[in-house]
Image 1 (cartoon, rainbow, N blue to C red):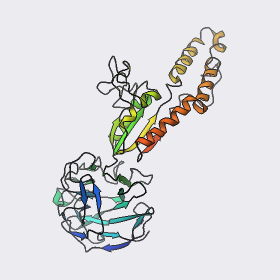
Image 2 (tube, one colour):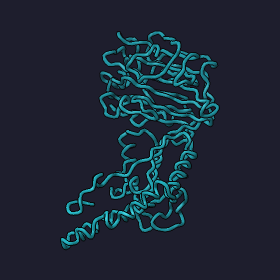
Image 3 (cartoon, helix red, strand yellow):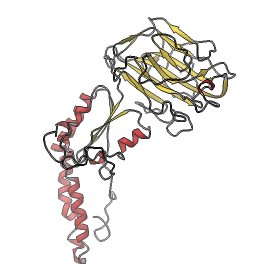
Image 4 (cartoon, rainbow, N blue to C red):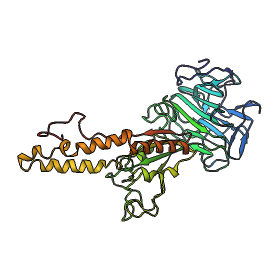
Length: 421
């Protein structure tokens, strides 16, 4: 890795760096049109200006140092850390960029590194290190590319001129990008943008402690497809273990006489997003009681308990970045098996002689074995594989996580006198 300190996430880079003079956040460098040319919806963007204040722009240089929101802006901008950067302090390094010989994971890339940068006015008691990569992805599609943000250290969030005190508080940094068109899907801003303390190393959800589209902490990857569509949605699919059955605070319309999907505000998909573990837009379609069929086909005219529900796979698309799915338990009558086992457990104590007559293994063992065989080599297993293939086809750029069911009982069953066997 040439030219980058160890504090950034380890990346495979080969590039010739061009360092810039030490600048305040109102200054910039311009690259010629032949260096970078990318496309977002209705916006072919070139040339590119590297602005000292943690961003690059495509329509003109930008000296704005107090960050503005990226979701509604008409400025074509990509901002790994839009804040009041100042590289004049002792111990700071000038912003550097590289291209033509730059590669990232085997793909041609343009790179900008803000390493050991301070904040206005000339402060260096706290420094940040972050990086932007624009990575060509012809393997995904002609004209496709990835936006990659890398973070190694985030100690400050605001400059003095943005109402910050010692680099903190005030109008704090924003992270994301926009084509400047306002078209849905052409912009994305990380949750925590503009929120004091959210991105700092001292926060448990700081930029260096989490990731997106990568197993490397501190790395955030945003695929942009050939049509300019940005993959920034998280689709949570499945049955009651995804929807949050029993966690209450159900979404409006999912707890009535004809719809019992019970999508809870306390379900883990909502918690992942609310706690900024997953920094994507959530499309929550899981439904209590769902079977494999309900993920593939609409239940809009089927009546209770899933009335009004579209096929869950219809929520998927090229803009889907993450999918979590768990289904199959209801197809195997998991709930019925547990219910019978618990009921038999109660009966086993009345009288003592029933201990041997109402064991779960004795009463449900053959049924469970048959269901497991159906899962492994039978129709349920085949249906699951078909579903997974369909999810991949509908969300070709998404990371797909098949979530396991919780374990309620020990792996080794107790004897039927003392336990759940």
